[in-house]
Image 1 (cartoon, rainbow, N blue to C red):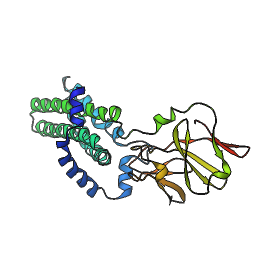
Image 2: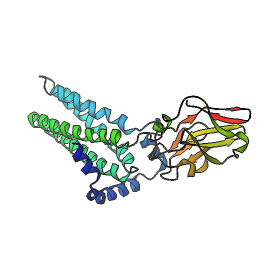
Image 3: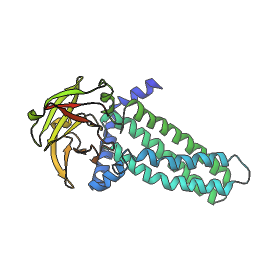
Image 4: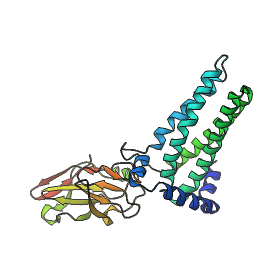
Length: 283
């Protein structure tokens, strides 16, 4: 399986259809608010993994009920719930997928294809059951569950092996040692400008607003973009840093994500000033 997945990651022949689908998704989901909602900005972490619990749970439960006598109606109801809920989950997944890197999109494309096969099987299962062909309905449902399981395996590979929609900056925080770390004289930090410094070779950005200084991990949680090279914008009255790579936006006074494609907040380090020198430590 490892060899197959590596070949899938490196299969450039998927880029043609992937590019066309990416442009279609981006052209359809144009509004920033819609994209942010589907990314899970309001939730504080990606929405798609949370949404897939409903169809997967419904389909798994239906598979169990299909093995029990007298449970046809209940199994059919659960398959209907799973089928309907799979559609918005797929939309959220496509929105995330369109903002991934090329190797991630290749695996994600096959992930989406497997789940599309599963959805088609479950639609066929519903039609068969409605027409009284319960044996065919069960067979199609188990075929759909098999396809969905394959899709789930690829989804796990995307998240745990390739880091899709997982915070890319949090691992750097674990490289910092405990205790307070000096970052230079407070007077050397300019007002309302991004300054890049290092703590144990981990890059952080400093942003001073009056006597308050924010110290934030510099690598964007989405795809490790350099926030230190980003620009500062006001969003809803808050100073925010915008990632120069994909436009993810974070509040500089708290680290909250304001706009995606990042769905995770950025890490802010506690600070103090001792004898005019700025210091920061792990949260």
